[in-house]
Length: 547
Image 1 (cartoon, rainbow, N blue to C red):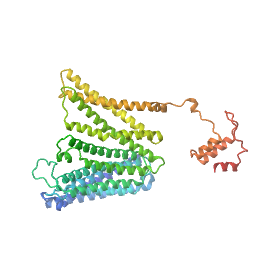
Image 2: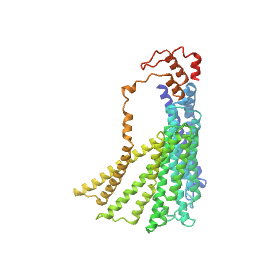
Image 3: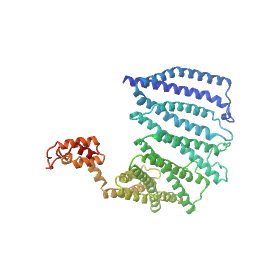
Image 4: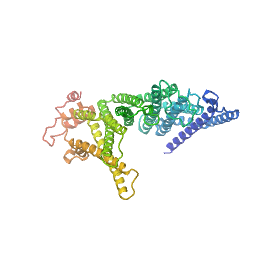
């Protein structure tokens, strides 16, 4: 315990000193970078007093960090020499990996959004502050990564912290990459519809002197984040398959599916609006302050899905039977998300029907019908995909049946939650109106809840019928029941069963030899079967059997 506290103290002080030196380095670089074109067109240039203050503060900080931090780093190195387990300790892994989990996305994001995307504008922005933070953070990340690569963790909490760092940073980077891709895609769509120049559909806060938009800087920013995201995937190439890796990769694949469906629904919505003769403007296509445009969302979703599919496939190829299981889980994820869009559209269409048929309702407009039908068309593919998953589970129950059951339980749980929430909303609106304290537009609110209840009832009824038909609940309960006393008593081993277990690789050669020796010394077993005499199994016969 004392050794762990000592180790905790060493890493805490070292990292605190490194962060202190990083802050001082950023403050030192900022006035220097402000003297360069990174200072922009209107930023005030630092005077000599500011330069002297920043320089003195940086030198003092570096000196203190070099003395105290260097001393603690030397103690860390000595601790690893004295105790071989120190290199694989959870404390070392926690401090190094959790610090990188914060620093890596910070450095990548600040450099992308604060510096690269702001270059080339007219008038030019002052990006010296963000450039200083990015450079200092990259320096800290480089040192931490160099120190982490000096040792290799193999198991336990240390490996868990390392995987949380690697896959957690990857997840944060793909989120940052989302904003860069959608921003660039929206600007490119705006430029394509405006004849080659960005029209400025997105407002700039009411200012009259809005800076121009540089598509090249946005492209470089996006490519930088793409490089960081894929680069972290390259770091993980030698990692063994793990549950955390699968969970985060499946979640990231689902993240890409969501954007794919958003893009498809937006595209269907535009098509239906044009069919219903609803006026469409450039802002409806570019969508600067609303959902992303359909081209950017579609391409981003396809890219993320393709990348994580390849990573999942490479990970699954290392174990027998894993590729089929991975494909079934991916199909279940895609089917579940498609079902969400489909039933959301069904609920929206039911609401429009209630508003149209019942009196005192808000008459739905053409764009309302278009939005509901667009969601139905987007998620309609879940019906054949779910059928394929069902047939797949029947043919290969060992690999696809768990994914099919998970899909059914997801539908059942989602329908129950939607029905409960919709019912609560409808009752709340009706009861408050009956008590003389109605909500604003309570009729519309009540009908929203009613539409949710009707659509959820259909989902629950269909999924429950399928679950009962395939005896999923009975199968789950039978698995939880303890075996009967007769089943708990193991059968007496025979020579044939031992050889079957050996050929099936359930036992080792030494275990088989031990069981055969024990079997040769037994008299007749309880079932009346004659045991193998000791004389019948000579040493040569035993060796030949085991070979």
